[in-house]
Structure formats: C-alpha cells, structure tokens
Image (tube, rainbow, N blue to C red; front, side, top):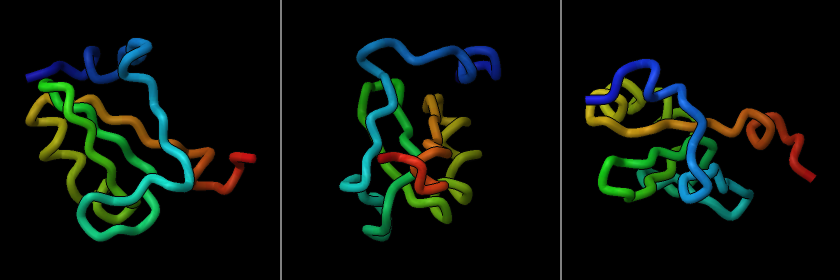
Length: 77
C-alpha cells in the first residue's frame, strides 16, 4: 500500500495526467475528471461522482490518483 507521501509525488512521464474532453468514466460513461493509475499500470477514469466515491478504495489498493481541476472548471482550451 502506498503512503500519503507516495500518493502526492509527481507522476513520471509515463504516468502524466492525460485527461481531455474525450475521456469517459469507466463506471457510467460521463465526462472523466479523475485518473487512477493502478500499481499494475492500468489506467482507470472516473467522473466527479464516481471519483469521489471510489477514491478511498482506489487509494487503499495502491492507485495513484490525479484529478484535473482545470478540466472540471472548463478551463482547458
């Protein structure tokens, strides 16, 4: 299990957040704002609702989580 410090470390080039308006939630198909990189390297995407709901479980499973707040606020051009 990753520590809080490990979860807050910047992602490597391979793990860089790459959400855009075409990314969809793996649970419901809505716009994705949260990316979860599992220890296996698998990337999962979640809308705000499912991201908020699943963050504790994903973090406990060792996922590195990133939420794109600019995308959420509509600030991407």
